[in-house]
Length: 618
Image (tube, rainbow, N blue to C red; front, side):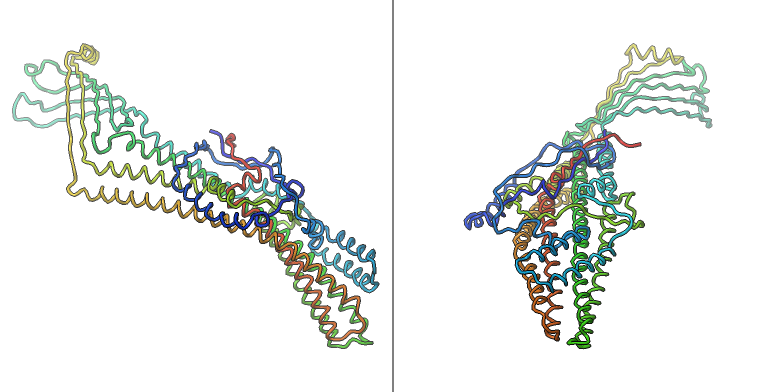
């Protein structure tokens, strides 16, 4: 058997998924929304009663090594274009740039201020200082060693190195060995027995030997058949020698040979293919459960890697937002310091300095958050090339996805109930419980075994002569035996049968619980995706309004007073807060996409990851 491994190619979050679509919430009519819930409920009920038994995969008997490479990129679904009021991705992402892109974005914003219909020199001068200072702050994030990673590269590194995937990859192989153990119960067994019995004991009469020397050898085969029958065949020979007087013994030593065939068939308890193959079928279901659990762990790990990737992107962009905010507060403070001899008081100067230093502290926390997010991503990859002890700046190259997605809640639920590993695990658990119940019921029957033995014997003064006499079939014996037993009350086996029935009912309830949980998870993921996407335009407008407010305050500055200073400092913080909220909404939107694919059970397909068999590494 080949070794279980994973192959795949991650999707691009920039152009490959830039298919514009209206959200299902915007496309569905009121009537369609009313019909959605009963449709999901009807499909759920059908899934519960249907006996869906897909062809089981062929899990490997080896361990698993995940890899990702070589598959073509998935094609995007082409649907209707987005609504006209939706902001462009460039317009949205320009408010939350990565530290590497921040200098370019700041330069573009400065050029836009200069080329505006009515440029204000005070605003332009202030922004020039802000841009210069912000770039100085962003250099604190930079480190000597840089590593640019796409999301696909992170997924590939995780598939190859992640400890959880590598650990869980052993479980299907372990289950495979348990299946082989169950299959081996029906293997034929060769046996060979040898014995030597030498005695020297007193006797009271002359014709009873006082000494004897008996040597026996017996060999053959025995096997358990699927019907429960025990079959054995053996060939043996025995040498007897004693001190009995010659007139009482014609052969001394005497050699006796025998050929024996025996059958023992249970007629009640232990009878039938279903009972005797029960453990084999339970192990087969256990192997499928282990396979599905492995896929589930891979899916969960990939979801964790993607979430850590976007959390790192969020931490870096949040630091860039804070760098601009710190720079703006510093410029405000320096401006008040320069006017301290004219119209600025010590109170205003101290207030501006306090706000600036508070933002400095917050920025240092943002830098620490980047380091923590990098470690979190490293720890989910477990890549030897990305050691936690090494100071490497990880730069996500993936652009956050902000376009619309077409959503079909009923189709998502249907896909989840068909593709989720948890559903298949629960169905296999029911199958295991059903088999165990049937086996326990068989054990409540009385024992009634029928045995038949056929034996051919031969006797001679030598081993060869004895065996020759055996082949003449002169001495043939038959024996038939019936054995019946039944424990009074039979309480132990009846209790075991009742326990098995309860466990089967429990497994059915477990399937109901899994299905309801999956439906709830899909519904929540769809709602989160709809809400996050709907939040992007108003939040972007909030950012633009906060930016206009700050520019207006700077343009109308005539005299420094406490009220003006408080308004300006609050406007700076408000702009940073609205940008952070916009960043949070966009990152949550990307995480909601992952959560929906995970809830549907299609996250591996979404990233073009498949499970294949590969040679076991040495």
